[in-house]
Image 1 (tube, rainbow, N blue to C red):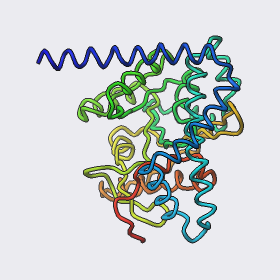
Image 2 (image 1 turned 30 degrees about the vertical axis):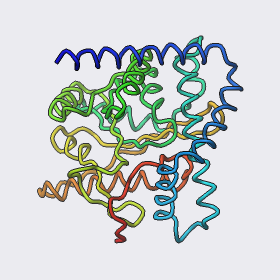
Image 3 (image 1 turned 180 degrees about the horizontal axis):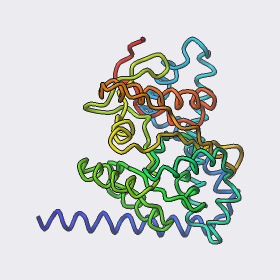
Image 4 (image 1 turned 60 degrees about the vertical axis):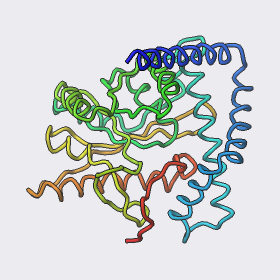
Length: 308
């Protein structure tokens, strides 16, 4: 027991040291150099991360094998790694650089479709906002929070506890609220309370769901997908819509909020969950098709390569 306590203290200390180290780098190095470094880091990661690179090739080939050549797929794969690295620099500059963070993010991130969010909030039952690991998704809820929207998000911690602690430090510093995905019972309870109070709850629903979930079509293949957004909608009556953040230039992004997803209740709970999940998964696919270099293809999405 004492060893476990010591391990936790050590992990937290390591996370805080890493946070301080990042702050020193970000504050002392000019932004242009940080962005140049991100491109180098992206290319190096593409070359060295064998497993993630192969996963990216595999996913892109599944999705676009009848639409894009192998050369086009390789080009997108390289762009994906560079985009992820550049997103990291964006986050570091936004959260750690000296200056007015709120003013900087409002200037650099435009907002489209806010009227859908405003209208959905009027029902006083909360809003379930489905997103994806797309663009600089970390800044999405933060930007809307700075606009005055009551945002919270469900997040699964990184497997590495030091990285998780580093991430917690960054979010606390930015004033971002979140609900840990584990333990599941508490996550569901906290989520329902947040929605009952009229808040906006973000889900990232674009990764393979281990041990359960619902099977829906994604790029013509069945994908295990988290059922949480649909289940919470049926329990609370909260409106479901989608939101994405798109890179439109260096440091410049655009948030796009989609119209609410119409829910047709058949009385068959299983089918209602499947239909709702398929609806928001189709919206995610549409955005990924339009901006393939901005989705996190290194993640596992399909358990089996089964065409529909």
